[in-house]
Image 1 (cartoon, rainbow, N blue to C red):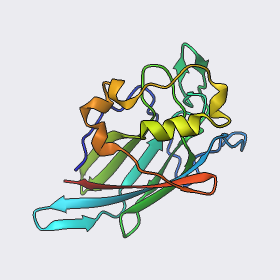
Image 2 (cartoon, rainbow, N blue to C red):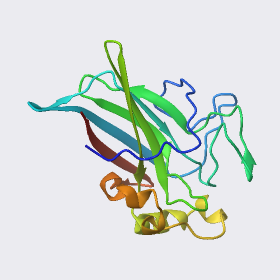
Image 3 (cartoon, one colour):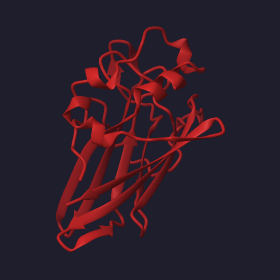
Length: 192
């Protein structure tokens, strides 16, 4: 079990069932950034052990390389109606859901993160688990030295300074592996 963390202000249920969330559906434009292949392995935890959880809906959303979210209004941007870097997948028979996205950028006041929500239905009972994934500070430094991330001035907030991260983010830390110019990360999670 991983700790639940705040949903944040930018969740929008866009109902976009897709594996590649880099594109803006209205234009087909692909968000620039270092490609990240992100896989969730979702299990059901019971007293008898863990079993793969099929047909769970895994939603993912995060900011672009410049720290901007889609379909949001903020003092520094207005992207209402856009849907880049958002989507969901249903887990397969092995509890797996995979996304092609970009390494997220940063914005003031938060450590680098990706939001996720896992929704399950058991008869008429609907449950959801919401949390966030984080990245090692040294990897963030390496990524943000490259284009297009290096176009943003200032510096990102380190994990230890983020009040949300300090609520259990160390258990939600991704460990991406580099493959050429892109990254691959897998996150295993068990739900009660």
